[in-house]
Length: 316
Image (cartoon, rainbow, N blue to C red; front, top):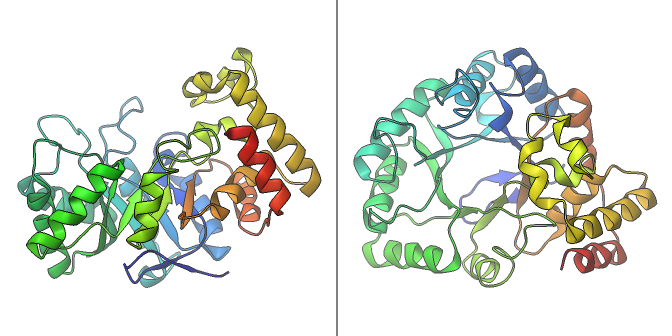
């Protein structure tokens, strides 16, 4: 499988990243291990998580996903240097544990390293913008972590073009490590926040891009087409916003392209994201081996120009 350079990080990643938000939530430890092993055996090399995953599940407090990944790494299923682990800092873990202050980042990274049972994180992301902390302070913390060898590369998530530019300017002005990777929300339905100025900036500055909600919370799998379908999974409640004429138009285009390629709608939606300008790799989750095998197939699906045009038009 051809690996793609992730911006200026020096890391090379497969064209699809496994989303670890399901670990400890809709995928228990045993299932998570099986999914991770299948993904890496297929030639992929990157898993994405965050310190806050999966705090929203009943009985969880955050860190559950990192713990499962750590146990899997420790099991020897894959050599540590063959796995690229992405995690994030900044989300609210309760009791004041949140944000992008240098003090919290230096503490949070130690917590993540402990849960992941590793001595370094390949890519450490600031999860959300924090207006209460200057970029210089946050980037100074990331710079220190890189110098200490605790992280290999750093980036930001959920930044708009103005915020990303401000962070790049702060890094340059202060001789600090810049954000070399961006993780934005992006899929066939949610295009407006990345397409345009933000994408142009990432391309111009050689910032790697790994997109989240690449299947629009599962909507682009095609299994949610009415309110009656929302109970099909634990994530169904988040899909209701897509059940509108534009959403149906996108599903119709996905159906047509899927039929031409004898592929699933989710595979086509991911192939579209992989082929979009500025995108290094989309992130997608799976909770069954059947879904995982579908993700694997998506990476080798090549859409024709007319397929891309039809999907672009339907989602415009």
